[in-house]
Image (cartoon, rainbow, N blue to C red; front, side, top):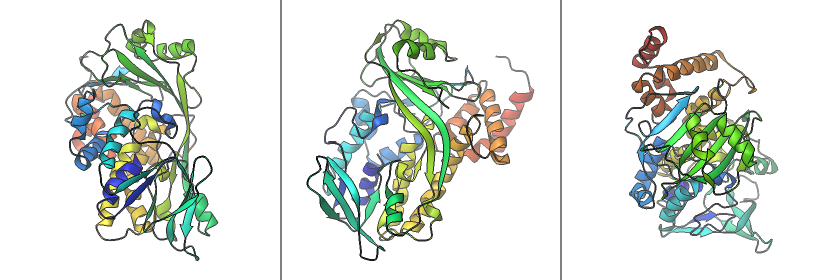
Amino acid sequence: MAGLLAARVLADRFAEVVLVDRDAVTEAKGYRRGVPHGRHAHGIMAKGQQILEAQFPGITADMTAAGVRPGDFNGDIRWYFNGKRIRPGHSGLLCVPATRPVLEYHVRERVRRIPNVTFLEGRDILGLATTADNTRVSGARVRERDGTGVETLHADLVLDTTGRGSRTPAWLAEMGYARPPEERVKVGLAYTTRHYRLDCDPLGSDLAIVPAPTPAFPRGAFFYQLPGHTDRIELSLTGMLGDHPPTDPEGFHAFAKSLPVPEIYQAIRTAEPLDDPVMFQYPASVRRRYERLTRFPDRLLVMGDAACSFNPIYAQGMTMAAIESLKLRDHLAHGMPQALPFFRDIGRDIDNPWALSAGADLGFPGVDGKRTLKVRLGNAYVARLQRAAVHDSALTDAFIRAAGLVDPPQALMRPANMLRVFRHSVLPTSN
């Protein structure tokens, strides 16, 4: 997704853009090997959806025509924290709950229509081509997946969007540069996903049921309809710190039954399974601090999960790639992008969502990391806000806007929101 979004803006400035992918992606509509997490729940947050629609006008209508049912991020999703539903309202933020293959297919089809974009499929990237003194990257060496056909693709600019497994740090070391400093938050997360045909309708007019993991209730789930089907759902169960949802059917059901939201288990208990449970493990969130380097080869950039891989339960990754693509567009407007200024700019964009997700993860006692006073106070305040939001839809809206990267996390501490949190913390409520 980061590569597709980057290609969209690069195509406005370069005569030719080549996307290199190890998979056969042309017209691919289903799961593929290069996206092992593609079988599990995905979400693009409100800010990301806004950017997609701006970059690819009409893409929301295309997905709706393909069976995706949009709705409001607050009013049409049942959000649960600590076993209690936060009060729904109307955020005005559009949610388009497509599966990863559906979302990626529609974005890729839009990029394929751009005349000067080419897809080079079934290729592994072996390394970078550089000048003799390693000060400038001049392309990439690629090879067909069967081990033949090695070639060098010469380029004016190389952009690494290869994800959390990016080899750029190793390539930098081979070229005599420092590796970027890394920050890691070990979360020991696993998703286990299964699909069902239901014999009841637990959702009604809602799009999804999402019990979010919290320190008090660390098991979570994403439960929503598959696009184009009113009776088929995707259920992704999540567990952190090694408490992984099992892949055997009985264990999967038992894990679902342990959730603090009983309607999920009640819905699948008599439903028809369409496949076996499949697990995806995510050991740690990783931020590579390229902005802290003092030297970097010219004509090479890094973005997306290759720069920062967020804990996926917060659904920030695709939206951050979209935000970074706009930053790339801004730099291209002034000529050939310079790496370190670009990294500093996307680093500032990453700061808030990283603080939001990494800080929330540090609220779990088993997660290793330094719990600064800021982190402890922030987690304590958010926990109070979530409790207050059970009774106050305005606080739900504020939380959804911050989680959706529309507003910065600091917006949760605006005086009006703090007053609402305080009022619900000290006064008895009627419900």
